Length: 532
Image (cartoon, rainbow, N blue to C red; front, side, top):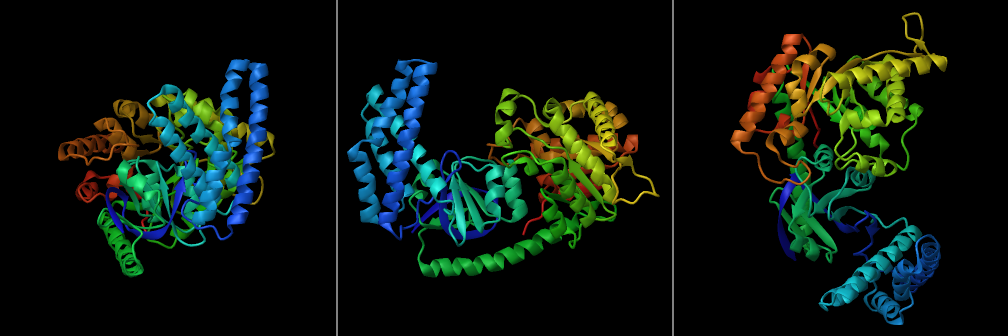
């Protein structure tokens, strides 16, 4: 049994089989014993044959398009596949250790690469990188042959870092914890983990490497610990602790958020899907303060207008008569759909609404879906990472275009005499997220063109303190916290002077230090993630 200290991003206790993700997020069945070594060897040989054919194509294509010299890179890599020593070592490990093909390829590859890299010669070091690359190609093929690599029971993700897309994919599959060696408390995936009540911890690189060979782990975020390969007695003890702790933590969290309500401040929920809205409708929330729509886009292609309409309609119906704030998609940072990755990286300095406007057709589709869904409830739409009033003006122009497009498709503006089941569209309040320095400096102009302000405290904190929300793990000092409260009070005053509502979204709403000031700031609502 081993114990490793860490930094906690989401509290709780989780127990499960280790599921290691490689550099591309592909699950490796690293820690499962193979039930049939012959079948594993058969899969390995088939994968090697397919990768060899792939390399033959790469060599031919490179020779034609570039030159023979560059094609030699792939020739050198393809030779690894026909190296009897390499393939023999993989098969030997599968048979003698009764491990999966993925496990054997990964660790034999690591051993070979290490020997090359430790030689001290540049050419041999490069050979080590070739071995790793080839092994990852083989593992990718093995992954395609076995889509059921996720353990049947509870599991814990072990990865260099975890992205929101991966979290969404694994959350519904008995995920009990996450261990990384890169991340931060305010990263989007950390926020999602806290909302879902999934324990999440960062460990030192040395501990991370040792955990790669673990079979089962306990993620004890109450004590900032990861325990590997514990005996049955300790696992049983921790499972009972987890049951008791998770129940008590849910109650403490509920009491904390309820204490933030002072008769004037409404309590809203943060969500990422209509399903979450339907789950929360029976809880003590006064509305939805933030629907993060970008997570609807994390598949292989963007959601259609009809798919989005249905998602927004369900959320509005779940909170019938209560405000539902839906934020237009906010890509960038750690939220990059695969089909937009190149576009986002090309415009890496942009985020939020300015990046969205460049993807005009995608934004128009979302606005059309929102206009159609608006007839089903009290819809408010919020624009992320706004800088000044021109951003709002540009979106208003797009909203007008979206309504014209709907009318060309036979939709009519909603009226009392028209049933909502017909082809109708409505309208919505349009507000802005105040989460950039530029928006802070343009509060009078923004208040003149906005129906409400929503203070995005996670990004605002990053901008005010200069901390990277995706990698900074340090605690805020009291001076930094006081500065943030001072800026929030300025935003609230600007909103009140203009006669528009002001709400707070972000993790500080349930921070024990900040919570003392929230009720005194005069905000109309706070919107929080739900834990447990």
